[in-house]
Length: 87
Image 1 (cartoon, rainbow, N blue to C red):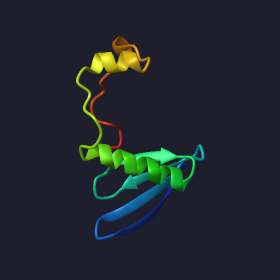
Image 2: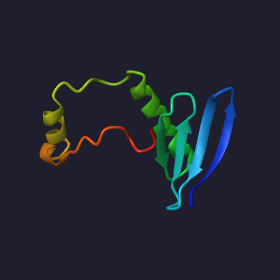
Image 3: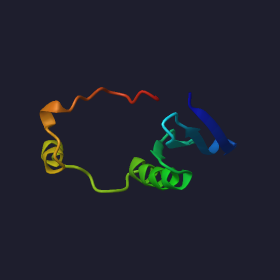
Image 4: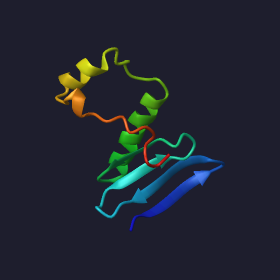
């Protein structure tokens, strides 16, 4: 069973969830954005990148199908399941 720690004040901060497989999930309390890594440091680095993208950073993908093919994913096998399970 996963366990979590919390370092939050006034709705801000990061919640760490220690997963059963040994990985650590870092979730930003304010935005709800989460990411994971093998260590807290890695989880925080990945979370920082996820928050940047969540807030409009990065480059937009104009042609999703071409992008998927470029990274080696068959667009016909991608299922848009809607909201992520933690929402």
